[in-house]
Length: 321
Image 1: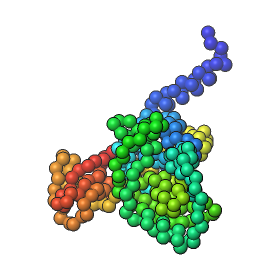
Image 2 (image 1 turned 45 degrees about the vertical axis):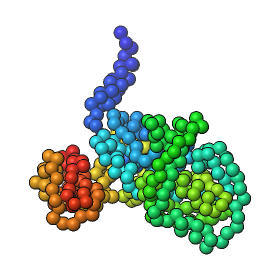
Image 3 (image 1 turned 30 degrees about the vertical axis):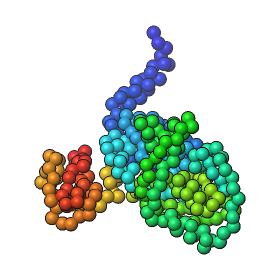
Image 4 (image 1 turned 60 degrees about the vertical axis):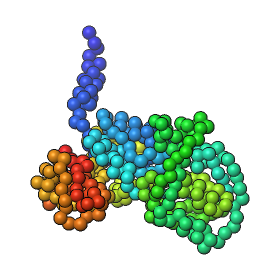
């Protein structure tokens, strides 16, 4: 027979297990303020345990050296993670001049050190201006891109270098916030696929002294600039004081991931056509590309794609989710 004083503890454990096992699936987006020194996947796993979530994924990996906004999608919101990956990003980065490293940041091996020539702010602005607008970048070897199914960073650690396909990116904003000795503090708003390490390295090449990223902070992603981020410590405190209900209240609706897309209002009948895999010609002129489909009531219904002929095709329908 078990001692009587053990029964309350056993009851509490049973209640806790029952609550976890009967918990409803979680759907939504959480904005985590990732700390430096942690991998994006490490942060994801920690948050996933806190929320007791079965399905979750992060969008837009940040290097261990980097901090800032890491959107985490739960449940059905993972369907729309790609639209966050495809959205613009906003960074603050510190570039250290005169140093070139193997990884493009201070975590790598120093390959070369060169003196930094004195230059006026006007001369520096002339160099920075070359990197505003459309750019062509070669992704770094130390990246999560894959070559024959293997991440490039794994090949780089083995001393293997492979050809990488050039990509077109767009720098919407490149602002010099501060300059001190051999360091530049830069604000960057850029399109998807932009590597800040590559941008900093290329600026260093133009300055004839080399450069590497010594700090990187992502301020926001797409339309989340007005939304709060939560540190891991804050999430743990909320979970301890308010339980799972307190954590669930932090989640943004999953349709928030689509706010960066232009809107197109359709009728329920047209939505039914799209859901059946049918396409149709739009009456109004809409630019080619992805659009957020809305009902006349304003309710989000899904994602469509307008082709070059002005026809709308279904990409993802989520009305009723």
